[in-house]
Length: 314
Image 1 (cartoon, rainbow, N blue to C red):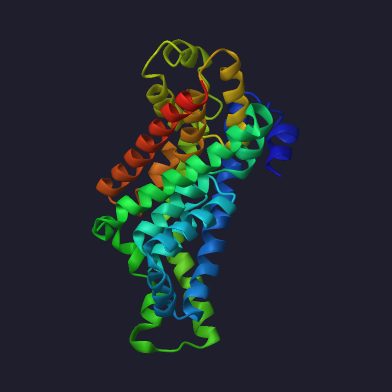
Image 2 (cartoon, rainbow, N blue to C red):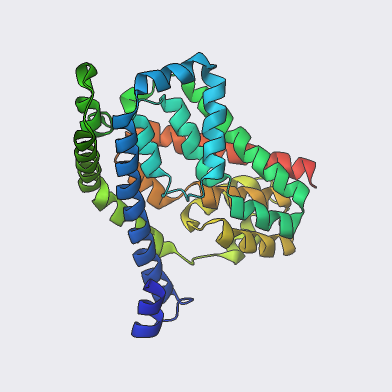
C-alpha cells in the first residue's frame, strides 16, 4: 500500500532519499504498531490463561543454561529486526521470565537473521554463514549468562511490571475467558499509549538516516591497514538501521573493495542487531544504565567476533 501511495500516487522515487525515507517511515511505523498491539494482546491473553508460576518453575527446574539456549533458539527462528523484537521482549519481562533470558532473546532475535545467513552463504560461502550463525548465537548466550550474574531488574521501568494481567491473577484468582480478553485488550492499550511516541521518534530517526551509506568512509577508515577497522565498522554500523537483506549486498561490495571478512561481518552484525531507533524505543522500558550495558555488551561481543573472523578467515 505504501509503495503504491509513495511511488505511484505521489510520484517519488523509492530509491531517492525523500521517497525512500517517507516510505520507510510509513511502512515501519505501521509494521511496529501492528506487532506491538497484536503481540501484546496475544501474549497478554496467554499470560492470563496460563499458570506463569508453573512456567517459571519449568525454566528454573532445567537450569539457567537451558533457559538461555531456549531464548537463543526462539530469537534465531523469529524473523524480527532490532525494533520489531521489542514487543515480545516487553511481554516476556511482564510475564515474569527472568531478565537475563529475555535480554538473550533481544540480542539473538535481530542478530542472527535467517535472510542474512542465506545471503551470506550465497555471497561468502556456507562455512562463513555457519560461522555467522554460531557466532551470533554465542554472543547472545554469553551476554545472557553474564547478565544473570547481576540483579538488573531495578533498571527496568516499572510500567513493564505493573500490568493488568499481573493484577488480574493476584491472590490466585482464576479469571473467566471474558476477563482474560478484557485484560489483554486493556494491557495492550496501556502499553501502546505509553510507548507510541517513542516508536514514532525511533522510526523517524531511522527514516532520516535510511539509505545513508558512506562507502568511502569505510574504505578509508575501516580498510585492511587499520588495526581498529573492526571497531570502526561496528560503531559505524549502528546508525545504518538496515535488515539482513539490505546489509549483506553492502557487505559484499565492501569485501570486493578489499575490506577484511571480519570487518565486513562486524559491520553486518552491528547494522542488523543495533540501531538508534531501537535505543529510543528501549529507553521507554529500560533505564539508562541497563540500556548502556546492553548496547555496550553487544558492541564488545561483535568486535571480538570480528577479530576472530579476521584470524580464522584471513
